[in-house]
Length: 413
Image (cartoon, rainbow, N blue to C red; front, top):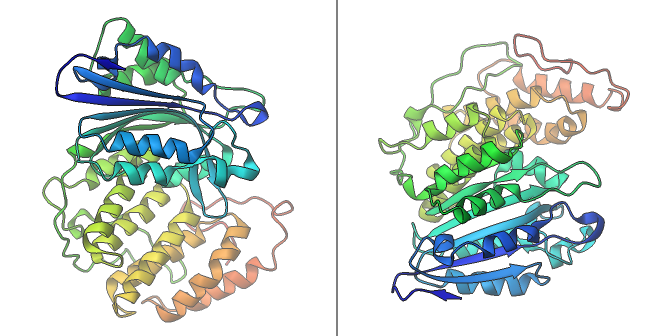
């Protein structure tokens, strides 16, 4: 569908999909008639416009072909996505459900999110916009709250992800419909303003909001990573976990860290983690796996998990950071290595989930033996607590306990 003769032609891809029956969480295609009534040039924000509509597609390879064709165009590309997200438990990957997706066939009938991200990252920066109105299944929701939803550097993203609705209830793509209603009224404000209006009109309060313009972020210079400041002294078994200092990042004056941590402290954890993961991906592509630049962003994500109230994920990421530094031949008594292990230890102590604590205990013990740290008895403290965890009753019989005001973990030591 072509509108106008301007050589600056843009493309809009409208993808709305959800499985039928009990698996359906959102009435995705209901928004397409409203979007179809919007002038094509408004959807692409260009004079000439090509519109591609995919309503309840069934084959992920076919969808990928359409995305690949749209991504290959040289002009501006805008994707409007509405549907539901699920988690592949085997590979821990997010998928967009299609019309024939079932829990048993997810890996074969849904569109892996990384397929979409992989096609879009090949485009020139500042030419791609993604507007999403998505609902997450329970397993995907838990991961998205800590991992975020990543597309890549140079892509504008606006949208919302709502938590799973109550049983037997199907939500409406009200966020994207609010965009279309505004456009049909004749108004065409900037996307950031449209996003704010749609959020106010539709909610819900616990939705994960995606509102960032990757194209506006500076490219960080190669970090020089000096030794981090030593954490405040506490008892041997309770290392502290301060946030990474901006002075350790080595980024340019327009440091993305303040905006990332401001989003986290404001409760916009998905936005913060998505931005950090984007920069980590940029560091991996630019400097390679195991580089100090990539490790820096891994550590940032570890602290964001702490701020999001996910000590298990934070512990995992801090241990991964310590392992990565050791793989770089950094010494076990290197302050950066010791700091990463101390923070992993601290987050492990914050865990109230006995099962996860028992799972993370053995790798932490192994790491602590290699990196004992400067606090006397830290290795023995981890071993004692792990032994104690194995003697505790199952979670359904355990009495819930809460951390004390001094930050001690809820499990006995």
